[in-house]
View 1: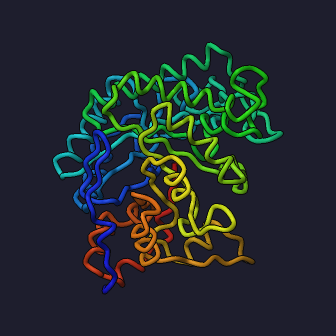
View 2: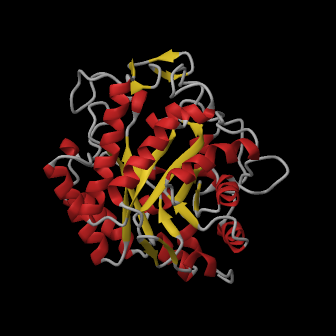
Length: 370
């Protein structure tokens, strides 16, 4: 491979993060933690990706200590003695392999259905009792519920630092709880947490500020956010760069160090008149580092089969476009999901120019991206 891959392999530092390259393993739910406890298999999974040279690993979504936080079977918790001991083992394995790792702290909100573990009687929680616009599920959160969830995120952040993690990621994307507060379609509140975007941001800002108080000024806090939702791929929080700036600036000022700007395909421009993607706009508007993500390393057939109908096709972009965008300093870091799920040595193969290995991708590597 003649392409200069230098931008992918430059070191990167931000507070507690000191990465050997710019590649981030994106969080992916794997449902491999029975009893909500990450076992030795989970530690081995993350260690293999660290051994494959990935600069930063972001764990699968791991639930904070609130009764309604979990929405899926066999996902790991980030509370309780046994689960935290499992995460400590994960950190030790990743560090022994020369990697760095942050947990993605998660509350699914109204995605949760009654009957889900650990307590089947607990409903989903959301700003206004809606899963999606016009679709009710669970209960609208009281002020006491909000305070409980804010505390749960802060406690998880404190535990992450105590366990030796290198930072944290707060999950504010994809139609889960924090994003349900952002989204006007699911936040119909008429108090200080609803109405204008500034009010709809208040819940997230309280979580960010509480997490910052818990970990101190020098521990890296990442916030993952998205325009699209699982409930609606076409949903948008900001229709213009000006609206996006108004959304991002208060979050940045609250204590976010790095924004993880999730989009489904990294090469797609976010707004008309510019080739910048969502991460590019985020970095430009905030001055903070941004992680881009979206179908890196996937084949055209896989993307079309996953995201598009049979009547539609999607143009695929390769590693060359990714490198060109990073050469232009559009964003500082790139998240890679399913390609690393399928092959822990994917990055090594990219670096060595093993094209056949890079382009081969199994459709059996499906996962829920968190």
